[in-house]
Image (tube, rainbow, N blue to C red; front, side):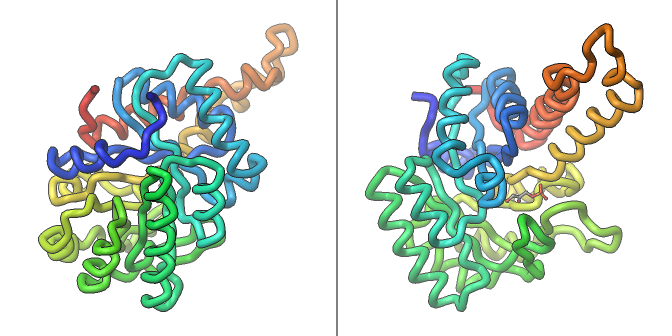
Length: 288
Ligand code: 13P
């Protein structure tokens, strides 16, 4: 069984003080590139879609089929969790309906009581179908897919209350930001992470995994982070490799048909795989 809800993976990660990477997909190249990295390293992985990326690709059902069929056609044998990233209430319900393995209900911008009630509902619906749930407390800074967070630190009492709903993993704001980190970024708040990890045994999630220095990521994982989300880093790697291909004039090589998308997109796809492998190593994810 390749597709899995990830419960065992994350509980083992928290106990074993390593993390599993959750990588966002944007199209077929991303899907193939990320799955190739997991297979090469023989490690479990999360493939996740934001609401915007799913809309871009044609909907959640299409994304699920894309991942399922790519797993099959590539002969992927490592465990893969198909996860909804930063879903609102409606998106989380739809992905549960469609058959994802795991959903994030991101209610951080709601009044806390409403976030709590809706998280409880999503947990009930998802667990009834054997799926996992991630919730968020304290917003992640920056903007992703039009969702902007101010980057406040997670409140420990609120985090404990959300964890008590039975969520399978909990995204915590510890000074992390989506996208490229500004020059004046203060770094992760390890004090707050320590307070959270001391009170909560649920695996904790670090969003905004691109651009955080390796030492900070490794330290955060040693303190209780079990899932690290990465999106921007792969987009930058893809764009850089594609630009180099075009700047070298390969797309204009008519004899070699360098304009063929299968050639044009190949260096970017390889860059996605290489960057994903590098991050898997940073996270210390053990081979299965
Ligand atoms: P980055 O784009 O900063 O890597 O963040 C990804 C993320 O947290 C997705 O939820």
